Amino acid sequence: MKTIGKQTFYILIVATGLLLTTGCSEEKNPAEPEGIKNSDIKVLILKDGGTEDTVYSVLFKAGFDVTVGEFFYNFDGRFIDGYNLVIFLNGVNYNNDISDSVQQRLKNYVRDGGTLLTTEWMTFSTYYYQTLREILPSMFNGAYDYGTETYTKEVNHPITEGLPASFNISNEDWSYSFTALYNNSLSGNLTVLFSGDKSGAALTIGTFNLGKSIHWNMAGAYSNNTIWTSEVKQILLNIAKYSGM
Image (tube, rainbow, N blue to C red; front, side, top):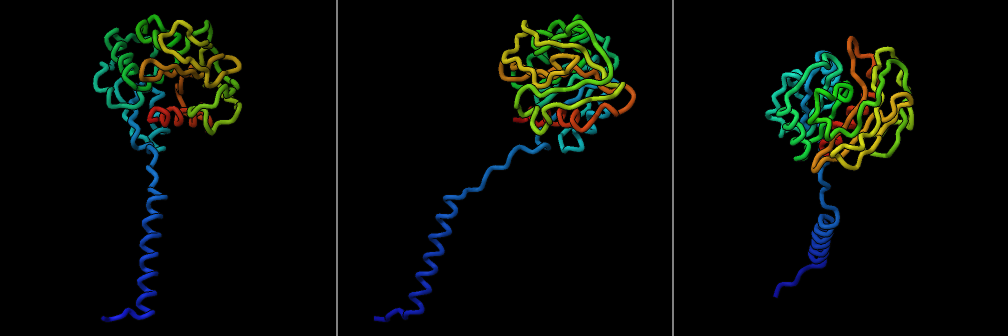
């Protein structure tokens, strides 16, 4: 019978040990799943004739899959189910109606799991949006203003993440309505994310069945991009990111 030499035996022991170590290592350290990427999140912007330019730019530069759709008053409500987030802008040309059937489609979109971001003057012009207003988390509180405002973070939330406890927005083009939580909303879990020292419930969120309704009481940029401070941009990016969670 042929015997194994000491050197050969030593090599076999080392090789066996390496195989066992590799196997154990793979079991204890499985590959971590990758988080959702911005490019996986699909955003539809319903334009108002001005604000969409900057909103698109901010989101596109951050890698989101962004589509600028129809003017909000021409939107027919079709093909929205594939989007994580629909941004309804009406800071410009806000005195335009949309049909009850389109409002119902947007409402159903939220019900079925979508995220809807509305902005001013949505709550200011709610007589145009009787169906949509039912799921809004906040409502017009009787006044509006322009210029400097201080935002204060009210809760820790993915939408407030990375933002300071408070920050100032000092610009003559910054316009906003005074808003408060809408206690008659069909949406639940109504929460103020940021309050404004003048405008009250500046950024709010509620849940409607499987989806989320977010209202931001700022009107948008009419003639330039100067309202888009780093903090305002971060809020927009956080909302888009949150819609994919």
